[in-house]
Image 1 (tube, rainbow, N blue to C red):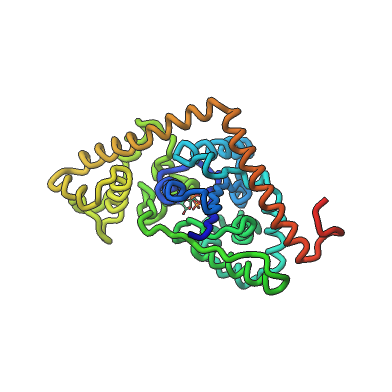
Image 2 (image 1 turned 120 degrees about the vertical axis):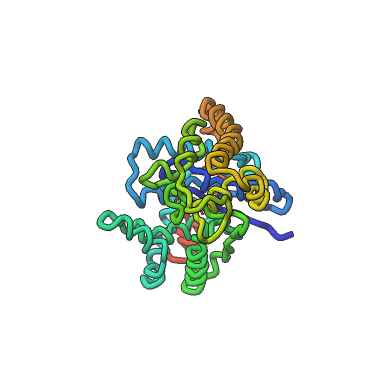
Length: 340
Ligand code: AQP
């Protein structure tokens, strides 16, 4: 087996929700459980706070969310004995490499990024240069660690392709420095949609709190949100292109219960939305309960959480320092070939 270096991250830009769990963290845990460290495999999971500030974050809240996301990674099953967890901004090599990439990426490449087009359309006047440069920072995150695979959602495929193009361009202009990472897109990890507007994805930054079920929501709040979730016209509980709301709710039910969508459709044949929603709420509450309990325990042991993040930072910094030295030498930066 060949060595796998896996890198991924989540922005501490709000409350983590069931979409982040089903679409990202649960895949990471699956990968972790499939991998051994025998072949020199590495798992690196970052809390990407530099990405988060591409949109304004209230400083006190941001600092709290960074710890919250770290504790949630572990509560959801990331094992700090098997994976490295660290905070992006604690390793300055990320922003240094992003700047170097900014200086070699043709403007046209960045202008093609559809995520920027989508996000900037909702931000209008408050769109920042940072949001535009987001993919350069993401490329730096990935390439600093000789990442081989990046588990991401389908929406990030374009950014990974750009990362490969940046690596190739750097290697060609200067000298072979970066290996090319591959996206790892789990087709069984669906995109979870907002409970209030099921054609938009569930999102941390959704202005409507009713659209998002957060991993730390108390049971009563989960019941309320699911009870108020929009449904489609008609009475049948089934998936279909004409039923975006039910498709989403059935997907959530399936992902948290382990049952197939078909089985669930059969269970609710002839039954009403109220029964279905009540049961769905209980399924979600039961699945989140152990995560919430582990989270509370971790937050009470602040020294333990600090140690996980310190160890992660030391590992990441040690590894990226070697790559940064190679990059600085290749580009001709500084008076020395090594960092003083
Ligand atoms: N609704 C979703 N369904 C499935 N997967 C999702 N992810 C996010 N939303 C869903 C996956 O979670 C990871 C988080 O990525 P991120 O924090 O970098 O930002 P994002 O994708 O933009 O997530 P949000 O929640 O929508 O945050 P905001 O509102 O701050 O932009 C990724 O792997 C993503 O695929």
